Amino acid sequence: MKKFIVSLLGTLVVFIAIVWTSKTTMTGEIVKIKEINNEKVTIENLNGRVAAIEAPKTILNLIAVDKQYYFEYKKYRWRGPKLTNIQPIGN
Image (cartoon, rainbow, N blue to C red; front, top):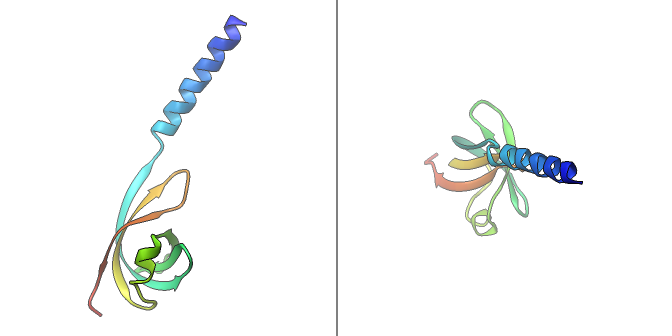
């Protein structure tokens, strides 16, 4: 029983270490809004890469489709990207 508890605690420590060091990156890029949904914005960057980004509902009412913006968002290993900052770009 003692070996089981020690191995369980060891496994738990390794799992916590993996989760703790999981990669989170911050990305900033100029994008064009392709589509606005309930909680996500579909964007296209200057290279043509399309992505769906989670955004607060208050911001969704302030942005427009086919306009360019500077987006900053966090990309998490365990979930999708989330918008952290947005700035309009004069078209």
